Image (cartoon, rainbow, N blue to C red; front, side, top):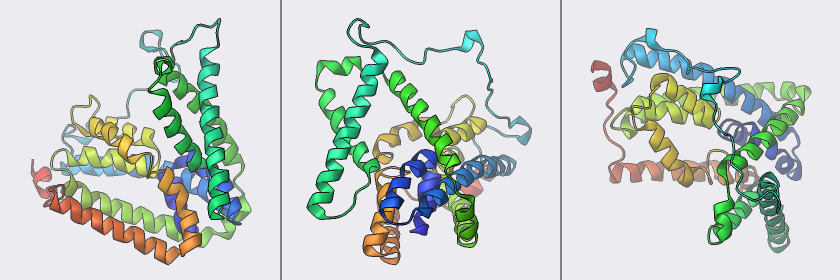
Length: 322
């Protein structure tokens, strides 16, 4: 199961790693929770530090479409306290307070999704006689609630900003609790395999960045690749930070493409449903068989990309000569 640690920690981040602690506990490998959180921390730092190194290298080699000199590289302007002129409302009140607080209404919706997930977890465990984690079941519960409520008048009462506020608050508590739950003796005990796993995955990721990026994306390949690199090693915020470093005004289509693919990719991979199922699949079918299946799926996807014209010759040399 240790092979799933990088996928859980890097692609999923601290939120997924924290949520997977109960999954590892059900699989009788509690150490996996501590290793997942360690992996998430390493991935976050790697996404930022290695990402900036790649950006500096890419700018100097002429791979970037917007920035043309390394001297122009700077992090996106940020503030510890946002000036009044730049402040934006975090949420909107959508329901009359005499009926119910808007924050409580949105919190209740989240509670309903978790309750549906809990029911699904118990029913599947009873029917198939296998342990199912609550984390992916709650996500399915969220899809069910979204499908139902979108067909009712209550759809107008949903405020994405409020949901983001609840999500952010819960994630902050989860990250703090998750980091505090890291067991240093466990990390030390697994130091050698964990180090080998992280270093090898880091090397493969960097090589894949420069190999697949210019072949998959015909235009602005560096911008498209760097946002995905940041999101899949750290979190989406890291990917967008790296993108804004090379494309401050969002002149390329990389940001839009990243946002458009999210509804199709995020529910399943990158720390979501498939990620949370990896340890279970590894236990049920074996790590080697599970790894070979996913390797085969990757090969199939690359072939399909080639057949449908999404994969072509590398334009790495052309971009450096531009």
